[in-house]
Each structure stands twice: as structure tokens, then as C-alpha cells.
Length: 437
Image 1 (cartoon, one colour):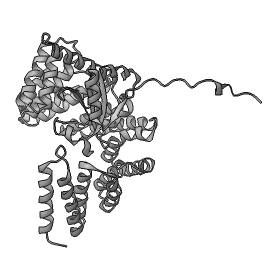
Image 2 (cartoon, rainbow, N blue to C red):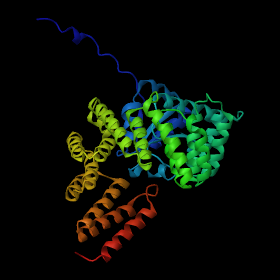
Image 3 (cartoon, rainbow, N blue to C red):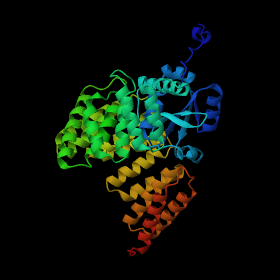
Image 4 (cartoon, rainbow, N blue to C red):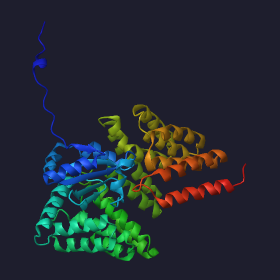
């Protein structure tokens, strides 16, 4: 009998990874306060494709493990009630958003909205930590300190004050400062949120070609487009032309460290601008290239959960190309692979609805709802009531809307949205007043 040599050889040690507390901000804050570190908060949601992409393809990278010297890491599912208190104190405009918080007073000293590469995440934590330390020491203002102050104002929804501080950070920096692109993107977002659309467009066009990174150039372009859409037709045309050229350049030469999700977002925005400009043929060509990239990534993903990061974009592209049946097959397969997730049947419901299959849409929603929770469940109830009403199921729609309204009233403060509750109540009244078929 030949001895099994491998049995006596110890398995190689796995490389270290960042350790995240799950939905436990109190413990993370206490530990950070004790150890003189910042608190890193990953504000995410299970239905957010970029959130899943970051958790599957970026945050596990072993090179990030050393960041634990500067921060204690926690992941907060924004649909869970235990995380509502945090959401009541910050402005979460994009999912995911990564926050860095001073544990002593829970002041936000830095945040990163959306996707990022491993290198960008490293710089984000390192630079914010340095700025926080310099600010606490009262050192001479630096770009990092100005950026930290801008982030604090932005998180508190003081958008115009944030815009001023972002501008200062950019003015104090050189072209090689690692925080320049985040500062430029934050500046534009603050101007947009503050409804300074003319200034947003002027600043956006000036720095459009200066923004670098995995996802930031696309995010910046999207904000610029939104601001331009609030202005004259002539200005819109100028913005769309510049953005189209910028996005074409990014697609042809993907940024270092950009994930497939980041690249797909760029394709998607380019397709959108091309369609706005009336170039449907070129838009379709880019959609086909995008789908091939996404399908290849899903095929080579390490697990169904990792592959699911691409499902949202894949389903939308299949629909755009008139291949909805392939989206249905893909999502049915994913539902079998991830039976405890509400995401596949919920996505499937949307696909069926867009294909005109409303009864099938309801069937899929009824599979998703028992698994869903928090504000997302209420969105699905609103969708269900809409489909029921369109199918002439008046009494069923009334019951569903009552369920939605009760859910809104039970949400904790950080998740409760008065406008959402008022909207559900208006929809219920409209169904009650409608003539039964």
C-alpha cells in the first residue's frame, strides 16, 4: 500500500482577510474607541449588485488586511431594523457607501460612494485616517483635511458647504494627490444635490477628463449628465457629446482595477447616452459586447453568490436585446442555487412584468415576499399591488396596499419615509375609488 504523502503535509495557510462585524455597529464602535481607530462602515443591501460585487471581488483581497491597523470594520445591511439608527444620522445617497467614522462622537470623517478598486479602497482608508489624525492634532490644513471636512458636511446633507470644502481640497491639491478624483466627484455630487445645476455643469465639464479610478469616472459622468439635463437643450447636447467621448475612451481602455461590475456600469451609461442621442444601432452593439463580458464573468465566478453580482445587469441587457426568455432561464436557475435569497425571484418578477407576463410576475413576487424584509419588502408589495390592479384584482390590491401601509408604519425612524407612506395611502385610496371590473 502506497502511503498518502499529502496526509502528512499541513494545508497551506489561507491569506488573511479583513474581518467584518455583521450588523453590530455598537461592538465595532466600542472596539475602535478602545484601540484609537476609526470605524469603517459598509452600508449595503442584498439587492444591490455593486454591493455584492464589492463583497465578493474587492473586500476579500488579502492586501486589504493591513487596514485593520487603522479601522474596525462592520457591514450594515440597510434593510435591517437594527441598522436604522445609523441611517438616521447619515446621508446614504448611493449603495454601497463606505463610511469612516470617529468612534468618539460618531462624526463621519470620510466616505466612498459606490464601487472601488483594491488600490482605491486602500488609499481611501489610509488618506482619511491621515487626515483625521492631522485634524485632531490641529496641523496645517491639507487637501486630506479639507476633504475630510467636506465629507462631514456632505454626510450631514449640508451640500453647499460641502461643495465649498471640496473645492478647497481640489485647489490645495496637486494633480498627483490620490484624493483628487474622489474630491472632484464629491464636489459635483454636492452641487447636484444642492440643485446648483449650472455650476455643476460648468465644474463637471472643466474636470471631466481629470477624474480617474475604477468607477469614479463613470459616476462623475452620470452626475454631469443629470445636471446637464436640467439646463437648455444646447447645454444638454454639449454635455452628452463630451460624456459620450469620455465613456467611449473608458470602454476601449478599461481602468486598472475596475471590476466587471464597474465596467458594466460604464457600458450601461454609454448605451443610455447613445440612445438619448438617437444612435440605437451603436447602442445595441455596445449592449452585445457588454452581455458577452457579463456572461463570461458569471460563468467563471467562484460560486453562485459571486455570479449573482452580474444578474441585474445581465437581465436588463437580455431584455434590451429582445432575449427575455434567456433572462427568465438564468434567474430560475439562480433561484434554485440560492433558495434563501429573495433576489432571484424578485428580479424574475420584474423580467416577467417587462415581458408582459403579469400572472407569472405575481407568482414570482409571491415567492420573493416571504424572504424579503425591511423597506425592500415594502417596495415589492407596492409592485405587487400595481400588478394586481392592472390584472383587475381590485380587492387583492387593496389587501396588499394595506399590508404595505402597515409595514411603513412599523419601520424604525432611520428607515421610515413619510413620503413613501403618503404615496401608499394615496394609491390605496385610488384603488378604493376605482370602479370594480
